[in-house]
Every structure is written in structure tokens, then in C-alpha cells.
Length: 165
Image 1 (cartoon, rainbow, N blue to C red):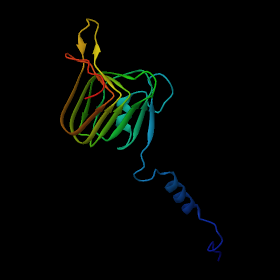
Image 2 (tube, rainbow, N blue to C red; image 1 turned 90 degrees about the vertical axis):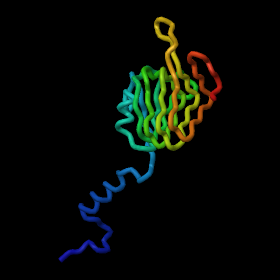
Image 3 (cartoon, rainbow, N blue to C red; image 1 turned 30 degrees about the vertical axis):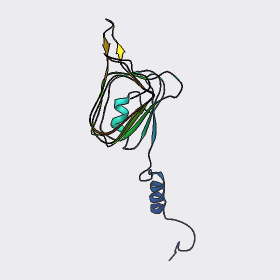
């Protein structure tokens, strides 16, 4: 009867189990994903990326034009530093996310509702003119425990308001 005990060899079942364990992401480890509407990336849409990634992950968004999104999990969504901002059209909503960070983006309209943790908006532009030169855009926050707006421009009916709030 042969034995592998002490021989330093693992059975194929053990090898497969060890390989599977090593390939799984560590619990609690946040992932970073890329979004680009016209070049190779993990996702071509912010909304699709939000649906696919895990709580606590980061989305790096390349310059381009993206449709609105609805966010209900803790994410960090970042435009590229020092370059043109990604433009998010329509009315984006953060609804019930435990916390959120949005930076380096341009929104037509952004609504934050029922965010129990910090909601950070940094280096963003909110507002845009349509073809009739009507100013569109609004930032609305309701039932958010901590709204932090820095280095951002809010351009609305009584704006612009550069430098945050």
C-alpha cells in the first residue's frame, strides 16, 4: 500500500482546492475597475459597472459621455485626475448607499437620498446648458447624514458656486 504522507505531494483534489482558494479574492478586499465608453476597459457603461461590482470597489472612469446611473452600494467613482471630466447625462441618483465618493466627474443632475454614511463629492461640475441655453442641473441631497462637497462647481439658477459649499 503506498502512501503520500510525508512525501510532499498533494493529491489532485487538494491541489484543485488550494488553487481555487488562492484564486478567490480575499474577504473585504476592494477591487478597482475601469470604465471607458470607447476603448478597451472592464466596462463601457457606469450603470453596468455598478451592477456588476462589489460593495467597496472603485470605478476609474475615462473621459467620455455616459448615461445616468442609480447607485445603491458603497462605491468610489473617479474621473481621471488632471484630464477632461467624464460627462454623465441625465439624472443620476445615489439612493440608500451606505457611503459614496464621487470625484472628477461632470453631472447634469445628481440626487443623493438616504445615505447614512459620508457622501463625498470632490472636483465635480454639476449643471449644463441645453440647446435653448436653459440651465439644467441640480444637486439635491435629502436624508444624508454627512454631505461633503469640495473643489466643485454647482452651476444652477442662482449659480455658479465655485469652490464647494
